[in-house]
Length: 369
Image 1: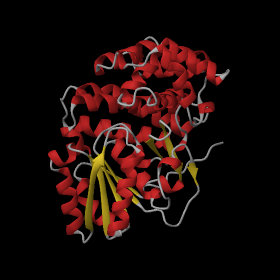
Image 2 (image 1 turned 180 degrees about the vertical axis):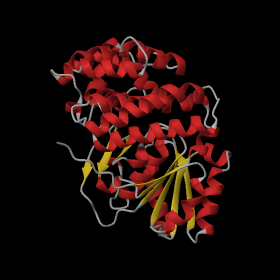
Image 3 (image 1 turned 45 degrees about the vertical axis):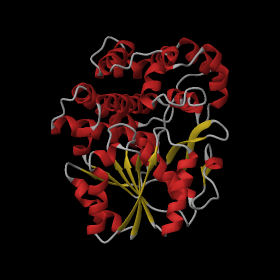
């Protein structure tokens, strides 16, 4: 017995960015386009999107101030633009950080500041704005999830703002947009997508649908991710990786994630500049050692999908191919930082297959990583 609900409308395919104007017009007439600080403008994507919006009769104001791992102050600055210009729809353009920031803006308009929202699950509110999510990386799944990962610098806390209002109204997934993504970003995002698939397969809340999606995502990533990360991205490669990321995002939205995601978000309290995918990759070997005894059959099937003798070898090969082989000490996370990371863990730790005292398990994974 299970439930499955994905309220986001998904528009997928090469060239579908051309539809962003008319899709946004269904939800508002003045869009705040939330994006990162440089890449989208440098590659001409920001200008293209604002042009498409204006051609469809939608005014566009741009907030290009989102850093990797967005801060609450950036969300508040974007909310101020919404209020100043009376924007009635938000377009999130970029990787997971830009889309997370856009979703936080959409609910932040109902509050004096976004920092206190971090770590909370919000009830639906009539003033929340609709979001049109346009991902340009293949990995985060934020375009269809009900959470936004934001750092509240006042509390030195990186965690989710969650709730029904954070589901984007529309996700426009155009695989052609990933063609200009640097290899390092491809690797980080790709490992995140792989982690979503693995965790959606073994989580306690996993169901037959999440497992089918996970299996398909893993096969797609095993086939196409090495080529994409090496810059050999024909259309089939781009579409395969984007579809895998979408399937993983569905799992994030419907069954959630496991301890690696909780721990990586908590790492921001001591290593705020470590990318999400790189942090996950550092945690995965130790987590797999702890988790495998509690879901042996599922991990054995995952190894088969990865064409590996066991899941440990399979994930190690992915890390090697992607160049994500660091340990925590290589990411400036020291043994002395472990208590702070443990204290910063938020979210559902009971979704993990590992049984036992959660704090003890977390300390063990961090110590071994």
